[in-house]
Length: 142
Image (cartoon, rainbow, N blue to C red):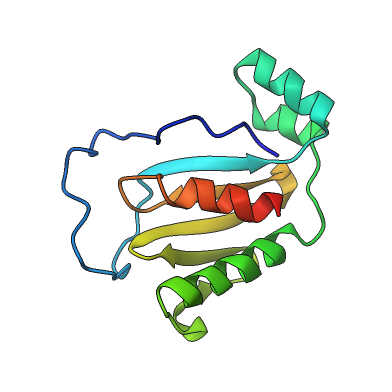
């Protein structure tokens, strides 16, 4: 499911800024600092995509698939993780039929269904993807 996570973490131009304060709040964050897509395809198609090195949404629509129930499944796992680690009540989550604003600790992100394109979009609202991307991949693969 999606590319294999690489060792280390994704970096942005702002990684040198101190992002490790004790504030566990994810309020007031609205612009994506990093964006990634969660794609779904057979192992053969995924191998072809990896070999190409680049991919268009048209190719994802044509060659991939969008699993029924993938967004509710990931939302359920994300909410459970949020409540167990940050002790956030479920009513603090911004949720619509196609997206949710979630926080893993202070790592805020938007999980958005792009059903027509055949993928999920993850807009990371903090400067590092070190927590969000591996956790979402783990939850998607379970």
